[in-house]
Image: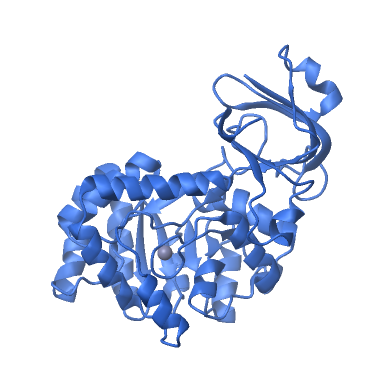
Length: 393
Ligand SMILES: [Zn+2]
């Protein structure tokens, strides 16, 4: 049982119980049961009707739903600080850098890979991420992808098989697609919920991506796609055609791509990863235009050692607001409910009765401070499944 009151600004993401699209309740209370589910939230003077426990006061702080980071690659070894340095000196970003992480990952022990993934998952939790999607994709052999998926599964239930991240240099390209849809898929299946493919220049083309995603879907996995990161291409259209849960990156879109995403906005989310654009000095997608056209948007970190080595959703929100034209309300929605939709979950990303009590108590009076104070840790406490797991209440 968890009972909180004196919440100055509670974001529920349920317009039916609060003000505006974020369903904000001022001077609110919240009650969760022993199973870690929300029983009630509303005006604090009604809290006695829902609990006999003495509520914990929140000193007028803001509370938001825990962040849902629906795109990370945190199973890897080594780092790419030197590649980053070279890029900052003027070299362009290219997909081939994944090979160096592949070699470091293959050479690492299970223990080291697990520790690294757990460390990054904890780092994310400390900034308020209560649900994390984790992809494989740095093993690129049957044995190493299976191992990456097994380790990913120890940090989250939202695991994604990304054997089709890049071609390893030691295998013929067509042979590699056969391997991904055959032996590798079978080996990874027990640990996977999703399948993903990097459909872009220097990675997999549209036909190969279709074959890979269809094989995953046939095996019972949900589908998602890395699309249109490096250039305009058919990735987004393919994602919409196949009804994937999310088309991720969407950096280079045509109006036709935006139309396709808009027409599929109930099934396919566009997940934007502005930290990747920032760290590769790429142009930012026009998030505001996409929203105006009716596209549903999620925000995520893309945490990986090459192009976006951050676990911070508040930082991503700052980028989305300051550089992509999203409003603070839109950025918060996309970092919580949008992420949940990208994972096809309704029990997270909001603070409605029946949802998981995953929330962040902020050292700030409102969610606007998340984007307004870039790079500043404003997390006072993080609650997951009704239990305080970071900081203190
Ligand atoms: Zn990615």
